[in-house]
Amino acid sequence: MADNSLPYERRGAGLLFHLRDDVKLLLKWSSSTKVTVEIWRGMDLMPPDTGNINSASFRARVAKDARLTFAKDGKDTTPNILEDLGMVALAMSSPVSGNEDGDDDESKGKSLWDLLSGDSPVNRLLDYAEEEGSFFHTPGMDAYATAKVTSNGPHYETYSLKSRRFTLWLMSVWHRREKQRLEKEGRKDERPGYFPHKAMGDVAAYFETKALFDGVEQEVHIRVAGVGGRVYVDLCDAAWRVVEIAPDGWQLIPGSEAPVKFVRRDGMLPLPEPVRGGSLEELRAVLNLGTGDEAERNWRLVSAWLAQGVNPRSPYPVLTLLGPQGAAKSFAQRILRNLLDPSSVPIRGVPRDEHNLYIDATSGWCVALDNMSQVPAWLSDALCRLATGGGFSTRRLYTDQDQILFDAMRPVALNGIGDVVSRPDLLDRALIINLPRIRPEDRRAEKDLEAKVEAAKPSILGALFDVVAAGLGQQASVRLDKLPRMADFARWGVATEQALGGEEGSFLKAYQSSQDEAVETALEAYPIAAILLDFAKGYTVEDPWEGTPTDLFDALNDKVGDEIKRARDWPKAPNRLMEQLGRLAPSLQEVGVNVMRTGRSKHERKMNVFSQEKPGE
Image 1 (tube, rainbow, N blue to C red):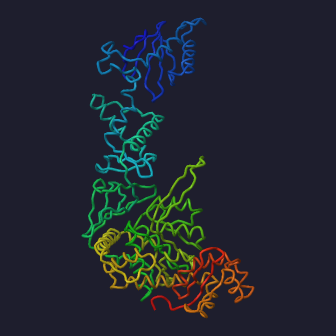
Image 2 (image 1 turned 180 degrees about the horizontal axis):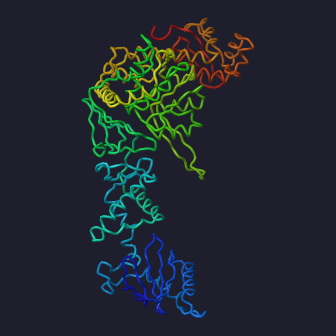
Image 3 (image 1 turned 90 degrees about the horizontal axis):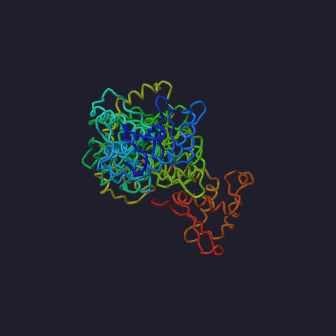
């Protein structure tokens, strides 16, 4: 019994207090701060009310309702009700003496509030979830749970604690464990109680604290991850199975056996279970890659990009599918995306801004942008960072200082008509694939081709994983005499070229062709490039042109007419000229033109321009 003058007794999951004036009060747990109050006298019952018993305003409201309920002939028959409610609030925080009125030794030292909430729905759910889940956080202090799931065969799944998936898991655990509890108590005909929705936030907050301050630190991954010289691919199926790829082959394992944590985003679809003995030629047969040498070149690049998409450790070139209307660019892009990272929306339009681009990138493994007429400058810079590693930050809503940070490196594919990519830095990271228009007599229904790919996808995936296993085994021995742009991708392309059916040197030949086309495209996009090429022919490394940026700006302007000077892409000032030359410098060097800065200070700055043989010739 508590140290107060109000006798009480346990009544089911509640506490029954015997108040003065023959009033009975039953307290039931509602949340971590609230109780449900039921009051009656004889046959008169007051409607239940829920609130904080320690709140004076709540007690005043309950007392007012009680006086109205129990009044006789307009007279107050419960003059002590408000004082008694205050005594109940005091009693709830008082220690239990034990061994009185049903209290046991285990209750001694606890408060009545502890007794009331001890078998509360929240405490039971906390116990259930702690038994069936483990909790951890990422280096960025995001909280996650690895949860046991009994459907589709017992397995483990990983959820963000802020996600709806985690809430649904808690609800499923509650329903299943409550049914088991009732059956164990011989009450299997009863329905499990409804978990109070408002209390779910308290449960989630508790586990977030546990994950952040008691849990281990561990990264989470989407679709593809690597550790210890092995690659892991999440099939995203209902059983959360993972493909483990090692230099000696691949195997299917339960996700719980993988040394990495995978998470799922909305819209991600499952890959089929891969089978052995297939060939990527089944994929090549449905793609419109051209004929002859052009088809072979395109296939070397497309298949290398596909294999690189299962490599979590390297930058990713931007697959750029170009061609006229009717070249099946979008079809090819959709098929390739769905082999790596199936999605309910496999290809998308141009994002509104960099924020939306990074949301897309962190919502899946691949980014596929469809039917682009051009790549704006901001998007070109963002895709460069996305291809080779970079991040984006934005202000958190309703705050002045807090930021949300996005960090991702993803396989990217885009398509369009004409030279949609023009900026040199993105072209340096691009694989240029020109697709021919399909002749009317050769056209086939896309749904028939997609059905063919779907039927062959298990064997195509198995063949792709064979290629990745071969690449893991070969990459350490790859040595390149000259490292091209995207050197890590080039090494991976060489490591996998024979597994992809190519002859030795076939990948580098195709890649160099793409790089040459990228250089030409970059130079053609800027009018200043052609003028500078002609200007540099008159100078050599032994006798270069020398002058200030303003001198160079004036010299190049003297070589063109007013119509070119008025062109949108012609630099209008020396500093704009320097910006363009900075972007074009790698492409200019590829065709033998060097633009060098000399001098340390702004006032001493000079420019050297000269022409020489193209490197490597």
